[in-house]
Image (cartoon, rainbow, N blue to C red; front, top):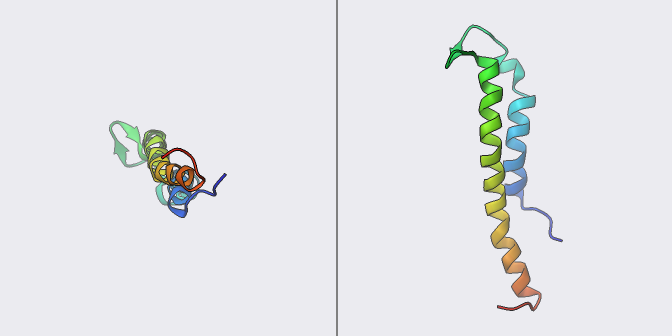
Length: 76
């Protein structure tokens, strides 16, 4: 099993960092976005954006996996 690429790891860490380490930047109730307090909107937005980041990480890894099968002598 190959190690994931750096790009895939970084794409996987973006949602984690955005939800865990940015709290001090957006911890306010005053700005309202779509009728929600900004902090609630931020967390809901990352619930939607996380699968997009994971899809991007997957797309980075798929070509690497198919290249590895060819190198190991599998069918071309």
